[in-house]
Length: 328
Image 1 (cartoon, helix red, strand yellow):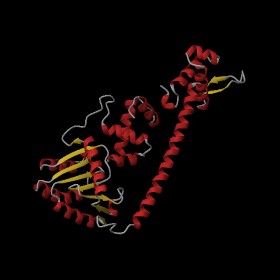
Image 2 (tube, one colour):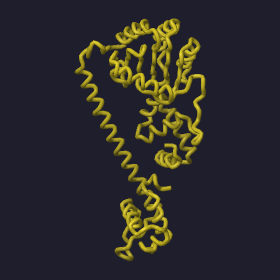
Image 3 (cartoon, one colour):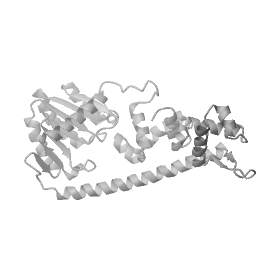
Image 4 (tube, one colour):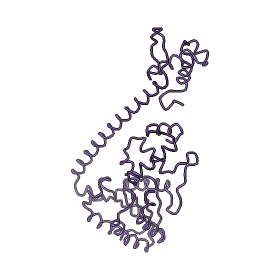
């Protein structure tokens, strides 16, 4: 029961026995629990490390259990402090990585090789996509993260997609689950399926990418800011890796016309499972919402509903209860 707090089964058994009979020694614990003396002493060491045992004031040299109300609360407090520290370290790591990426991007030449082209600005990207869309003959794979797509993006894509489908080019597109709640994007996705395209959705997606005939790929230079430009590459190794990433995500996604099933054991939707996982990993509401393509308000509303189902009064408690139930 208390494994999530750092207690293994032997340590928990020793702690329970000492709470029931604080005066029992090592020999009594061995006989009562059927454990070896080594196992009992190791369990006592772990309990002392967790500050669930302390030296008796009445009998110096003897150990007495700390009450669960105090001891477990101290463990929770230490875990909260550790989680906050890891979140701060993660934020510093992200900031350092972003600076390094920006510095490296500034050093790149406009064309790294004959097989790779740097596209700077939205106009350059749109012009290149128009050329690639005109030349594609078999298949176009698309990953469109970020939830609802802008009307400008949909308007720019429609004539290119229509022309490709009229030429019997297979269009496979991945959106996030949240587009099911956006009328404009949902209408566009349905139009694509009616024209012969295939559309699936997933709670979270890799960064935006396009692959034409499994020979040319277009990806943003910085996935967090697509306005900085894109890279268009024909490098076989890079294209093959992006195709493999797309296919892996496609297999886990659900067709647009189908309802996303709930997990049979937990009763959670895939989006709820992913939200719990993202928040448990230390992401803020804003970051989790961005990954799921939903608003901060939606994140908080969904989390409030999950806390109610878990009968938890705080998010930290909800995380512990979710872990105990095997939801994480």
